[in-house]
Image (cartoon, rainbow, N blue to C red; front, side, top):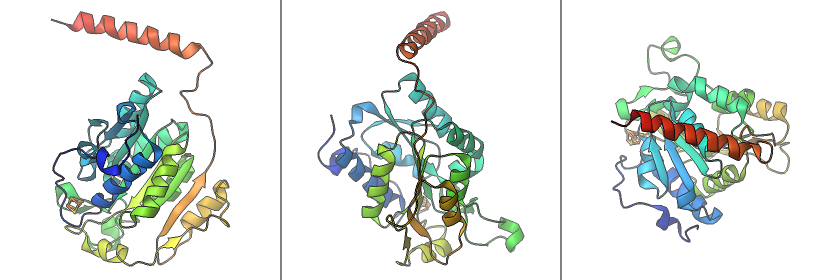
Amino acid sequence: MGLKYRTEYRTDRKVTWCPGCGDFGVLDALCDAFSRTGLDPAQTVLVTGNGCSSMIGFFVKTYAMHGLHGRALPMAWGVKLANPSLKVIVAGGDGDAFAVGAGHLVHIARRNPDLTYLIMDNGCYGLTRGQPSPTARRQIMAGENGVGQPINPVALLITAGATFVAQGYSEDPKSLRLLIQEALNHRGFAVVNILSSCPTFNRQDEASLNRPEFLYIETTSHPVHDRLEALRLAMTEEDRPRVGVFYRKKRGVPDERPKGAGSEDRRDDLTRLGEMMDELRP
Ligand code: SF4
């Protein structure tokens, strides 16, 4: 059963992020989206990787798995395959998604499992004192050759095959909550790349993010089902970041099996797993 108020989705754990961290806005928007979609905490699993933002699993009243850096996606898909009736949400940082986890990201995107992925993109590795991540917009290390070209998360996700791709901003909780709700309601691999700030270690990006003039994608004029148009929008350089839904398309998901076949397969798997556990018991 869903909970009525967003505050009810918060655990009692003390939030340990630095004051002003963009992850606070994501946590608020996520709990708000949960309460508005009536998400049942007992039927929801929040899977995270490693890093500051991956602590979010401790602060939300759902089941949670805190995994290894970059391995949240395969863990989440494993949960979904084991029990497709669960709502499985993945959350983590840009390093988790686009560096050590990049191989998982593109292959899971092309397979389109029914997962919701929230990426808190602050352009740095906050937990290890702010080294630039693959999305770092700043050029802090020995000019352009030090950091290289930043990854364009939205373009990468569209070309890899994600069927819902949006971009939000941590300090705009209302529009972020709406994007998360849309992602939760999408059947398939739905990703929201959330531009987020790290005031402790990435002051340059934070300053550029704190300007209020974001470009909101016009839902009435943007052909959101057209992959090439979505890619064109993602690749068009502007001096302000774009926020909104870039791409949305229906496609089959891999856990859709012929009626009657899946449950037997799963029962067999569970029986085999039980036998293996019995063998391993001392
Ligand atoms: S180091 Fe940066 S990302 Fe990590 S909690 Fe502090 S402000 Fe947030």
